[in-house]
Image (spheres, rainbow, N blue to C red):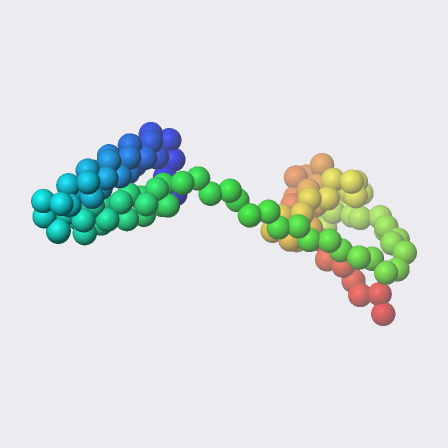
Length: 115
């Protein structure tokens, strides 16, 4: 996946190869090998365009169903025992993390089973 100026250089090169391919195909009456060369130029240009194009990122969404009522307990920092705000919970790489406002400690939250 090319970006910026490199992408445009590749597009211009591909356009030139397509133009040469068309010229070689039109000149195939003089030599039958020019038809094959023209097709090769066009195929190479299509490969360059394929690899130079911009790809959109894939967005993955995950939903969680909660079957029982949620009870939020007081959360204390394991480092300084300060009470933490549960609204400041961050999910990083699928794991919940809290950061203490007082000591700056960042730790992973774990959920205890309800059974």
